Length: 389
Ligand SMILES: [Mn+2]
Image (cartoon, helix red, strand yellow):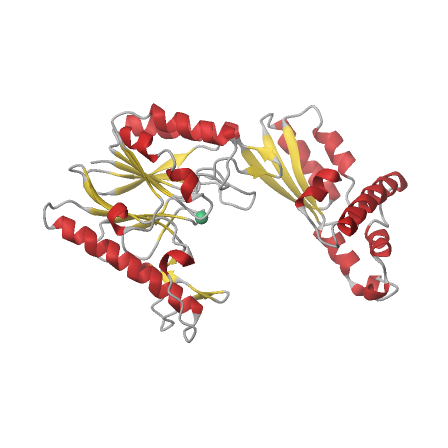
């Protein structure tokens, strides 16, 4: 039995308004190739298939086209926090005809099953508070959630062990949540912000492999066979680029398959001269590169100059940030008056004071429209304002 574990495709995700369908398509073709090449019997997809609960038709098309192209393989899919459980499970009867199981409901009878003579699967979708919690006002909410998740995982494993009495198949779990390595330095409970997090002790030792989704980097959790496959393509400029599929062989030995980079992403940080030098360097590579620029200059960097440099090349600038400039203008000492004494227009004038006169005029007009739209909406921002602007 050979298994591939993947997760967090986030189909439909954009990067600063750039769509990434080409990359998703290339990834799915790559995945299919690896399934065939390695005679894979089971494909596990641990949630966040789509980036949004209401994905675009193009994203749906990629997904269904991929699933329907698979032959002689069992697929197990769970919903992640980004997925709409009802959307994902709507076609489940049709998909089950193709040996594709979609688990979105928190229901032991549906989550735990024997996959032919291959494995006992415990497929736990992303657990929402309402799925697992009975509120008790006297107890800290994070503890209730932690206990709810722990109980549910224990129940899933308990059912899997009952099934194991009849056959000696390995137990394989799928889950979508943040899980940490248990710290042995006396610190028993790890908090992120105010949320109590769970560690690898959540997973029983009787589980042979746990296929996790949610974290975007490939990683092993603790010393058991608990893995995050990570996203197949970097979802942001800050994500690491070494993306992997996890391949389990007949003895559940774990190997990784490197996913190629389908779109180069680069970050450039520096002063104006350094940025221009690096842009010219990237242009000389003559390949499609998407760039995010962080200017260290104290004044705003002229976007048109940078755009002109990359014009007619395969380099595209997706975003320019000016953190030093923003910091400078937001420092209260730069205001002649206290912020609360200024009206919204005076604040905006301060923000754009270093721009060209022509840009200033255009920005002021847009700002005026935005402010009026907010006023019309009772002082609140609303999604439509962007379109109106
Ligand atoms: Mn997630």
